[in-house]
Amino acid sequence: MVQYKINANPKIYETAGKSQRILTETEQDEDCRDDFDSQEIFDLIRNINDPEHPLTLEQLNVTQCNHIAVDDSANYIRVEFTPTIPHCSMATLIGLCIRVRLLRSLPERFKIDIRVREGTHQSENAVNKQLNDKERVAAALENKHLLEVVNQCLATAA
Image 1 (tube, helix red, strand yellow):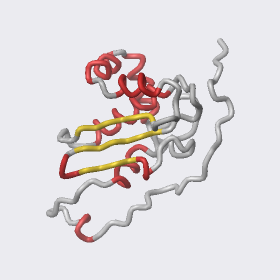
Image 2: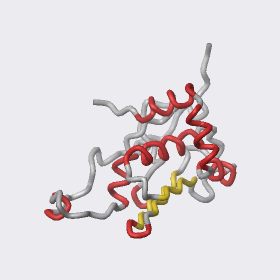
Image 3: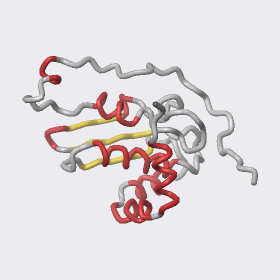
Image 4: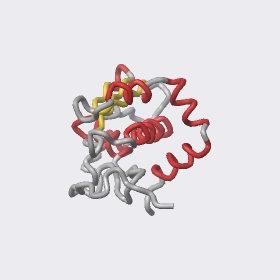
């Protein structure tokens, strides 16, 4: 069976390769509470694999640190991502992968809002609604095949 890629030749961007985060003494002290920030959230999602290509979301410029907002005191995180093409059918799956990575990595106290960046997808309202509806997300994660695809995207190279 031939599989056709929706975006057969995506633009690949240069990446930093590793976190740009500089740890302070306070952050390294296990007895002190340190707040989450956008760089820490970006480091959690940057290496998620694209469902269509053997590339990361960072390499495809789908995720960027400056499109992440964190309000640690209000327990709120918003991640905006940019699909590689305006009609990307993988946008919902990419958003689901971001949500699952953050749900698995962050304390339960956070409300996580995943959104397609405004003006970057022809169905952004529908995608955003799906990604932020608890029942729809739960139903998607009950689908064994879909969960397997999500887990493959979240698997990082050793």
